[in-house]
Picture 1: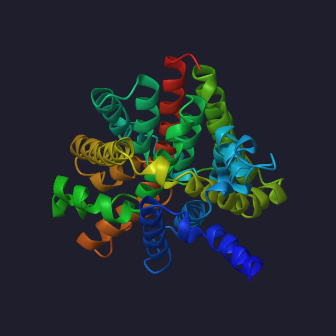
Picture 2 (picture 1 turned 135 degrees about the horizontal axis):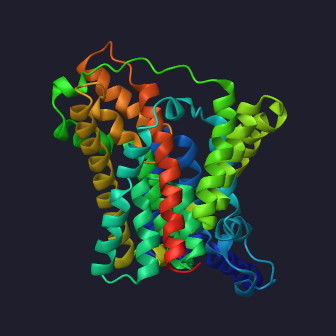
Length: 382
């Protein structure tokens, strides 16, 4: 009987019930909320579901992301190796290649003024950087946190890894991906506050046709110019443009299909679960995380507002030819932000079609956020 009692006692002590903290239960509840938002509400399920499940796993079984040194067998947890691919900037770069292969740069080429709105939306990043310094973050940590304002999860992970801020990578990545998923909730009130119904109802002229040659030359020229000025952006901008070249050149259909489908979704699974697994209660439930979440929201709000305000200025300069709403798409959340511009514009006039016009600033925002990350790396000599 003593053997049976001892065996049952050992089994009981191996269950998670006796090892979890209050913080772990809080994070499990947060993971369930994320799963609800992703499954029931449809808030970017490709992002939220793997992140939430990784969060769930690590708070039930912390060793799933333990390093080899922290485990008794010296092997390490499964998600530790996924997370290493984040730290080495491999997964963020591959995500960019997939985004490039899935995205039509035609609207940006047809309307180069979109670059200005994409640049304006980066204002939130540098605003958040200054605020983070004031809140006590060191310069590199402040830079890593501020990039959340671009609503670009892969770039946030990439910069945090490059700046040696692995300890902050979990909260930064979760905040960035959460704001990407919540674009349809966060942006519309800001857009409506800063514009009139008349401005929101402005119909823009149809974009000019873009030739095949222009679409092929664009990723090559952008890569040369941007990477010559900021070589540190090559992993992100280079992969983004390589994916787009696969799409546009017309002679590597197999590579385009792989980059935009199978490879993209494999990387999303690896990146999402590993990001979620970096949010153990010990790492996530602290004052610094709260600051990061707040700073990310402030950065995102300022970036959206700056894009809309520049859109209003361009509307004035062009005598009503540009709808200010498309400026909000200057954040990097592709194509969610462009869809929000379309939705808000359609609320003012159901016959208004802004999606393709908004894709120009949206794509410019992706490039702009990568450039902002490269600028920080150049400043810190990375």
